[in-house]
Image (cartoon, rainbow, N blue to C red; front, top):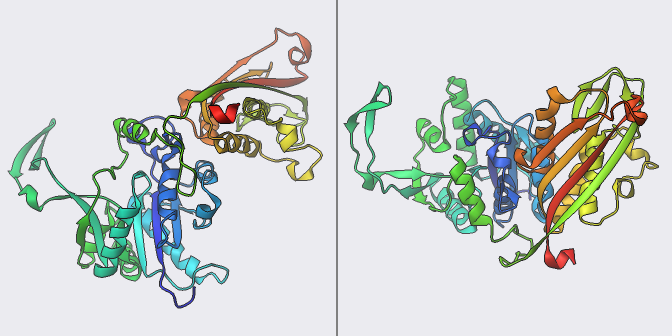
Length: 428
């Protein structure tokens, strides 16, 4: 692409989303059967005038992110740059994405050459972004160098002085005709925006909550173009519910076949069981969590009986063999492998069939180690791998009253059940 102007998008997905509640950040929560971030990335990557999408994620969110990307059509996935780690503030995260684009342009193996001419900055939590809005952003950014989408304010706005205890004294009532509620994607000439970010960081300023404000601070002229009332940011639980309702007619993403809103689903239940003997060691893996123990387990992979049983339960629900069929122990590439890879593969197979995961239930059978202190961490890890709400994951433990190999503390086992829904035609 040498000598050819190209456009990029930075997707800011490094936030914790704590205001919405729960243990899964809002950008990884499901709306209409797909993660918010999956829908956002798909919408941007499907636009023909965007060459490269640069995601910015939290340091500990790699598994969440990769589960989202796995659901994308390969054509869309090819337009995603490797994710980079965000900062403590939104401003720092955007700069990390911009700097990553500079490195991408300098990489001799990259599909792009030279820095992008135009960059869009978009919030991951705005999955309703559509082609028309992206078109308007690109045109406005190209024509003016700095442009943000805005929608007219219908409520009367008051500027107040905080008096404490939830009381504010009105200082001004601006004319609402001149007010706009600003959204993303915001469009900028790449070089000036990068320079503005670097200058703000050099000045020790890190509190800009949108790039339009930072561009104004840097002396750039910023214009407002027509936004989209549907392009709401998911912030509160009610926003998530509304987005789920809005997307519920179709799981499909760009480059995927549309799902008929009248599709009938059939409930399937799959079960799984796994067992491993104890051996020398100082830990065991259970549900994707490393638990200290006085012994380890004898296994070809990491020996996570909980994830192995759950993988088999999902595979059973779609009648697609078992874990040994997909990951044979005779294959050396799986020696010592992390079992989250097996579970993520089974999840992808369910979703490739148009399926939805409703509930996952696991029982660990062991005299030791005790999992009580690790229960919530295990639930959260499984929810992360499977891209489901924490409320959809149950983990229990029991002993066998000193009976059998478990009772003799010779090993441990797990059984699992997975409830899913498949489109009726596919389930037949």
